[in-house]
Length: 350
Image 1 (cartoon, rainbow, N blue to C red):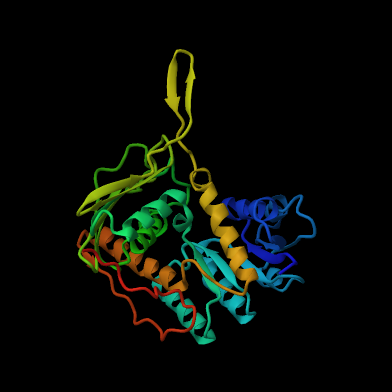
Image 2: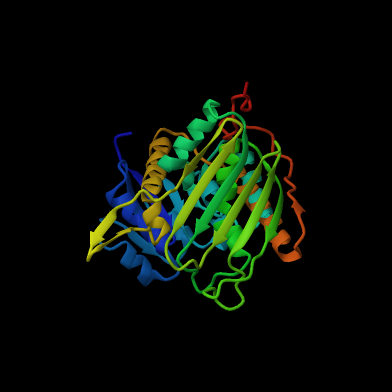
């Protein structure tokens, strides 16, 4: 317990570089031992100033570097499955950024591989579960003070989309956060999805169907709607309102700094998810480090990663067909100790 947890970071892009910084200067109890990225110059830049770190082009070399005891995966989604399975082969605990895999088939292979180990090794990076506002909303819903939840209204806006962004990615990349948050807040599975498409924004790149309106149905009869708008042009905004039988609660109203200057006033709006959810990422990675040093794995499980992928795939089908699509989940592998399932009874209300 006294020594630092040696972490291999796979991927040194926008997210990976931020995690390298976080592990090196924010989180306690860990150190970055190795970094892997095919663009080694980018990896060297991200790891500059980190003492004793080695840089590799191949993930396997970073996993096998001396002193590595855990893995943080922040590489592009298509590389996640191979990296997770390689970590499992080495018995290394994993924190994997979402999406766990781009498709449910790959995610299910990860679930099955971990089940064969007989213990949890992986946590999926759905960081909203660590956001202070989301945690307060979760606590309020769990308390039953507002009665049974009936609807969730969600807003997810970005300033602009990156060049590689495609129409399906609005669902399987951006809305994946709302998919997990809804499952977690309501403690219900998402069973069907419908996608409606207003006319595209004139600020959206040619061919990108942005924004979209996504409607989920849950196993308990609640409804979840999501406005996803990735080229809003003005800021990064994430909001969620729970409407219950006895009241409602809303988070994400941008309680940020108000600046007065030049005879006017304006309220700052976050321009990036790394700004809006900075504390959530810090809390997430710190919790992962603490648990790993204690020999535990907590947080969102690989089953959560699989469920999100399955719902997102149904969402893409709904987007492309214009027809409501059911969500089909595979049978869950036989439980093993610490598999991340709820051990309490489902939420009930008087």
